[in-house]
Length: 330
Image (cartoon, rainbow, N blue to C red; front, side):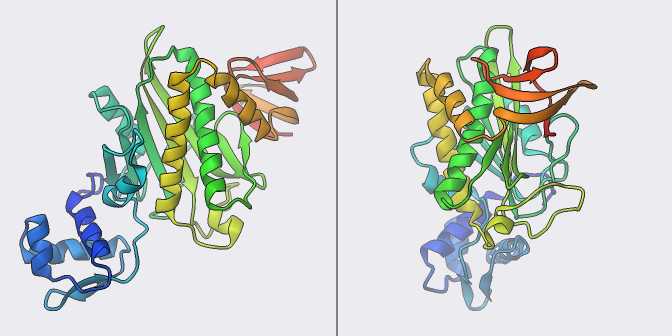
């Protein structure tokens, strides 16, 4: 399998079949009939699943059985959890990829449907904002990008990016309500001051309308440690226990679906997003910050969001509106 090719869809079908017959051993013959391939090909696919970390007992002579439900973000596992959302039909899974955002932007440019989801077990060149990279080790985080095609002007895209932060915040709280996540403008989610999630929103637009938007979300889920130069934390480190990436990814996409439907349907949605973002962020008001952008920097105290969602900062020269940039606590 080429490293950056979509995952063989037959892997998901095998997993689904073994999950449906969890209490019995499933023969190689039955699997080969169900997915229309030879028994030797079934063996090769089972070995591939094992290399992905799926715990499959058995061998060709006796048949196969799952020892535990795999925590892989395979379409066959996620799709039933996403029924009724815009994300339940076009789910693309990669064992390894450069960047899910890059793949989603390319697919969107070629006409991929709204609601298309791109998920990877591992990214080799995950992207953060600007020139930053995103630490993406195998099967420990959620690396997810979605394609949206809203009938909105480009000026509304910041609110959509902030809504993605709210969706992450909500998904984490759904699974463990003890966690107090903090939203950092414009696109990070923090726990105890350390980054647990980054959001990268990219847009292709004309002057007055958006052609498409790709929202990329990287969540640190089960990492046990990070390189020393990264001020990052995983949900496992924060709580002391392993998380189900499948459960969290489903919660994230369902929350994002709710936020997005509201944005598209209601002209008052932005107001609600900005209010809720500010309520769940220690960075929006009264925070001493320095902001760097394009080589320049300003310092001051945050004074809330303007009506479009941009950050207002009181500096020595009066209140300035920050359109983008890297925000750091002083």
